Length: 66
Image: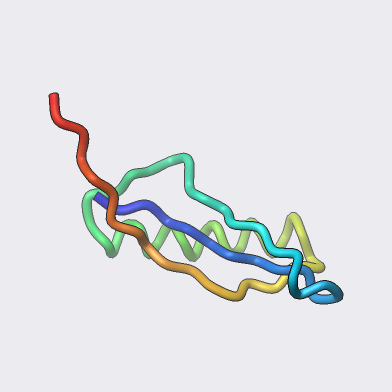
């Protein structure tokens, strides 16, 4: 399972960064996660125009056992 994580920093203050972790996932495939990451990047850019995306990845998460 994968979850999307995006790192964005303020253009005028590059040391001031925010990590955005997807709350809709997790996703079964890395491809599905990548599609979600692209959507998140678009949303972050529209909501916080002063932030620059400096990183994005799909992190593997452990599946919960039942």
